[in-house]
Image (cartoon, rainbow, N blue to C red):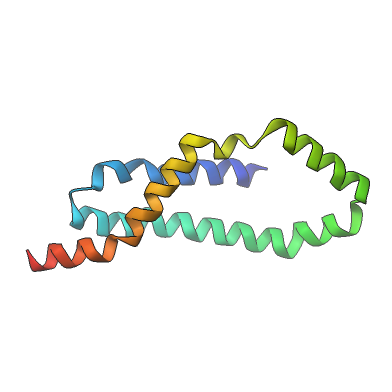
Length: 110
């Protein structure tokens, strides 16, 4: 659970500067090599730990009734980490990263 809280903080840290980088391809390149890379490293490491340790343990101990209860609770509460605002921020971040090469090409040609 501590890692999940850290994931949220790392994601916010990675996404916060994106809005200010729209016009500055050089700053965008530096940002992409630092904050975005750290965000990805942290998330991949977290996912590896879940796959290797947590999920096998869960599969061994949880019953079908346990899974059904989790499904009911998720449906009732939603996911506070992925509301409409968060989804829009990550959509913008994805578009921004996808266009980063184009921005770097323009910066080099300019």
